[in-house]
Length: 382
Image 1: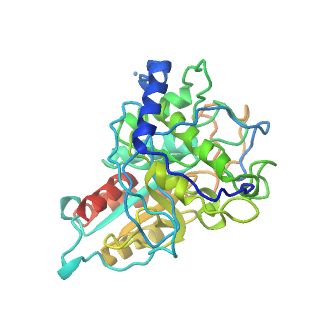
Image 2: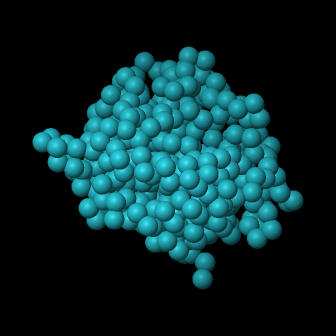
């Protein structure tokens, strides 16, 4: 999704500088950007006029680690009430990653210690900041005592009207949709990175926003801007990241330039396009595989959980829409979840509910937690 002029050398920006720049941003924007109070493109979705969004180019460093054998990227980043992440050397490029379903035994056969003595972990991840995530998914998870990860982005050319708020100065007030995302973060759900404009090679993507249209400089600026936008939604460092549209494999520009070093500078872990159940002992946290939940039945989703238990592994499930498929709504991007929600690549609400119920029943064996929480647990155990 991006045109490529690859510099001979991509210089890593020290995380301390990122934190300093973010602190300066918060100081000049006061509480409007960094302490908003809560209220008491996706590939083929409708889009506005194509255009680039202005925004900051600074980022907050999160804890990043793991030299690995993969080319994935990862998440890091800034938060509203951000606690500085621990700096570390981040893994970047290399050979294909460890996506398999190998068991979670370390040296001497000792099992990986997931929370509560669980033998496996599951992270429920939801892409693109869709309204059903707020209206359907969030209450369903909270009713079962679970929390999810939401990799949020905007439609190309849409400024301040979708999941990510504007960071143009003077700052526009948070919309009702933005306030809902902020409230979700305050309830313990993870708000995580997915770029700003979701560059993608899908046929319906607007000109100028495909992977071939990006180079490293443009992606660097967009990743930094996404950190500032997420900060307004209450995201806290260290942040995580999900590559849109298999861009971890396709890369940027005509040459397919790998941008995982940019991700590794800003994020502590990343979900990639490889399929599989991760071995928590060997997984590169900057190259974590996933299994796509789109269109699956409740029984198929439960089977994935059973497979993770058998493998003593980490299952990262990827969802887009949940509920009824819908490509557009009257009023297009208006926030009115009671009447209409843009929803695509869906899993039925019944299948999602069956999975949530099953995870609740399996709490003794399965630790269901946000992507960042599991990645942090694995990192701490190493």
